[in-house]
Amino acid sequence: MRKTLLAVVCLAALGLAPVAGFAQGQNAQQEKSAEPAAPVLDGKTLDPPHTSATFWIRHIVAPVAGRFDATSGVIDIPIKDPAKGHVAFTVQTKSVDTGVAARDKHLNTPEFLDSANYPEMKFASERIVAAGKGVYTVTGKLTIKDVTKTVSIPVKYLGAKPNPMMPCVDASGYEAHLSLNRLEYHVGTGKYFKMGAVGDMVDIRLAGETLAKRPGCVKGE
Image (tube, rainbow, N blue to C red; front, side, top):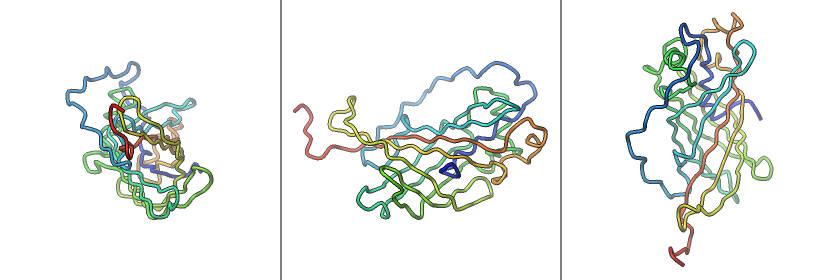
C-alpha cells in the first residue's frame, strides 16, 4: 500500500538536500495577492484550498517535511462501479515549499526537480478496483521529470458531509499514503544519498475534497 502514488508528490522528496547557507530560519510566508477562484461544484474537481500534497524525507537521522502549494486534479470513483471512475493529479514543481528559501531554490535546480524544464508532475489513472470498504486501488501512469512508470495507488474515500459554509453543497473527502524512491524518477543524482545526508525514500500524503450541489436542495429551506 505504500508503494506509489499520485506519487506525484513524490516529489518533493526531494528536497531535503543540504543547501549551503540555508542553515537556520524559515521562509516568511508571502501574502496571497490573487483572490481564490470560485469553487467548482461538479463532485469531481479537487477543491484547491482543501487539497494538500505533503511529504517527509530523512535528513541524516530525522525526517524533514515539505509540501507542494500548487496542485490540481479530479477524482471520480463511482461507489457502485469504480471501474468507470477516473483520477488525475498534477503538481507544479516550482511550488515546492520546505520552509527554507535556500533549500527550495536548490530543489528547483536541475540537480533535483529541474522545474524550469519539468514544470509539472502528473498522474492519470487507467484502472480502478475496489480493495475493501471505502478503499480503492488506482493504477495509472505517473510522470516525474523524464520518467514515466505504471504505479498502483491506494486511495481511501473518507465519506461525504454537508458543507456548513455553503448551503446545499456537500463535500466528499479522499486521502492516499505512499512511499516513493525519488532516485528512480531522477530526482537527485544519488550524491547526497551516498553521503548519508538525504534519504532516497519519500513518504507522501495526499488529501483533498470535492464539492457537489445537493440534489433537490433549495437554499433557505
